[in-house]
Image 1 (cartoon, helix red, strand yellow):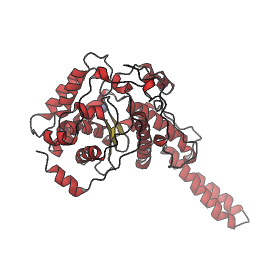
Image 2 (tube, helix red, strand yellow; image 1 turned 90 degrees about the vertical axis):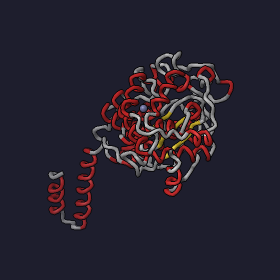
Image 3 (cartoon, rainbow, N blue to C red; image 1 turned 180 degrees about the horizontal axis):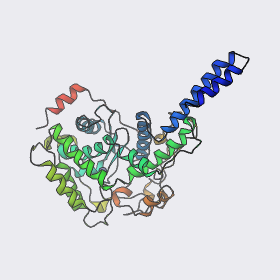
Image 4 (cartoon, rainbow, N blue to C red; image 1 turned 135 degrees about the vertical axis):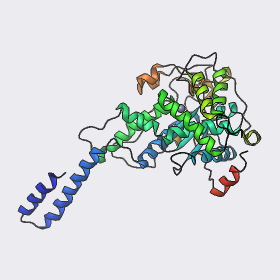
Length: 372
Ligand SMILES: [Zn+2]
């Protein structure tokens, strides 16, 4: 940058047309800014992180559908916001979405969009467990696990000639990669352990019994005992037992608030036997990670989730159990090569529309008093 400006100024001074000087200086400044941006090109701004998260969420919603129930969303949002306020990033625009599928899963989208499935809510027994599961996902977001893992892996790179104007394809790649990671729960062991620890800390600070993630994991582990090792939430890690014990050690026995009655009052879903979960057929809508944004197109009004892509969700496409997903191999060799379990392959609902709920500080305060 230091070399650029004097050279351009020299050219400008030699020019007989003084009117051009301003233009040239402006040009020099732009070049300087572009060079600085090149240094920053792998750094993701908070706005970009959220934008990636919104797009990842749109794909997840399109894949599984959204439970169209404001009461359920309000309750999950109250619990989730309570927990997220205890995190290292309390001020993010935290959003909680309940996905319309029997599969047991939870997905943390970058920038603060946390998804949990109807199937998971059915398996969870009390509010403290819900807090524990949400807190684990919140931990992934608060510690930027997805974005950091992509940056570390060098899986996504800008071309050497790329400038800010060409950032859209770079962000598209990042979004696709993030979607794969989030959908496959493809965090490494270190990040999982970190999110588990965060779960203990956040729930403890919020006043909940803090080892509850372990209770949920133990139930999930028992439910999955006849499954191949890999199935949905946390399943990429066969060391589940080890994790459960570690969470319990970290949690100790400080508080006991499980808040079961309030959970049962708001959540009426029953656990679904794993053998009853219907799967979508290979190659169904929303399973791949392609995006529609073109290079240089900065329009933010694209809403892939609201496109009526429903092929594959019809009853005719239901198959009984595991759907190997060859299509995702197009996006990720590692992700696509593995089989997916019933939770990951589970059929979803057809309505991807977000159920908007607002939670005020006063409501949160009142809600907090119910944790006992
Ligand atoms: Zn995780």
